[in-house]
Amino acid sequence: DGIFINQQLIKQTFVSWNDVLKIEITTKSGVPFLNIYFTDPSKITKQQSGISQLFLKKMFRDALPLSCENTFAVADFNAFTEKTKTFLPDEKLIINEIITPEIL
Image (cartoon, rainbow, N blue to C red):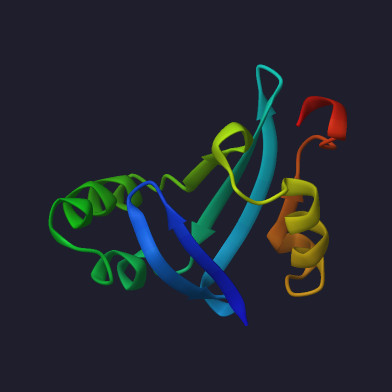
């Protein structure tokens, strides 16, 4: 089990829950963000092509997460969070602010 990512620089990539270091949900200026940190980002980078690899290597070298703004997300963050709770231990799922439907 895991998550399928097809967003920004990461295209059509399956990531096992074992490869997720943590998932952080937070808001910036009232906009919900989902930040995914990986245990070994090189596994994700190797699956990408050309220029994407260069950008991802820099991003992950700087310890930045894959960040997704709810405005552009296909999935519902609340549903994702609830489903994620069944796969990740509490210490790997960090919710800095409760995301309510009013701000989605």
